[in-house]
Length: 251
Picture 1 (cartoon, rainbow, N blue to C red):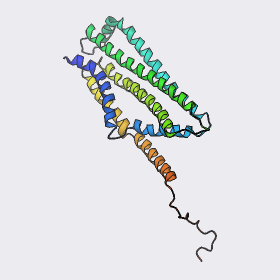
Picture 2: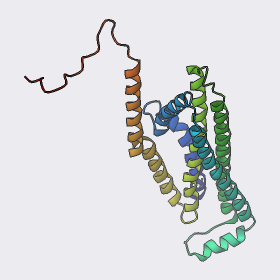
Picture 3: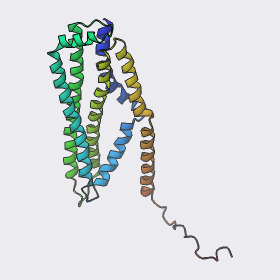
Picture 4: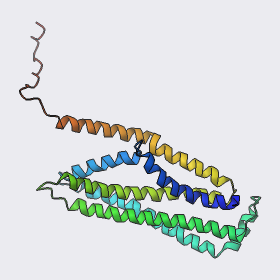
């Protein structure tokens, strides 16, 4: 297998491999996405007891972001289809840049096919995410705030939100790894370095970033506050007396 073919397929393989390996790592060390899923559960729990359009506004903002990226993926797919009809002109342009490479029509077409595959996967991930967030909005709107909601129902609603977020992250990763496919036009070896750099950046953001530490701290604080509310007071124990008022305490 030639280095040209390896560098062409590597971004797609890294993208697929990353989506397989990271969930296994999350079983050992929670990622930022896992921590944020705890906040999604808190969100659903709070939405079940408040009468406010605030939750609808938040859901609309999330769906707007996903819809924008899905539309962008469609434009990129159409652009690659257009380039397929201009391969000779593309090769001529690349040769004029003096990149010290020999481009064949087969190599370029195969590489464009890999790029097309990545953006199609991104499009499907974003549209699935949009559909799942739409389901989440329906389930959130179906909550009966007057008669209460069971914990199992709240868990199911928050899981639907987490599914949408997971597919959204998958689409974003496809965009990240597609940068390496652009580097292919410069050098056969540059996609390898770009893929490695992308993996390091994504791993840092998911497991070691300041956002990860901040979200973890917020989750710990929320868990402690919830625990303090649920711990029962021992029977027969009187609450501590308030401190004496006035200036006679030290006399």
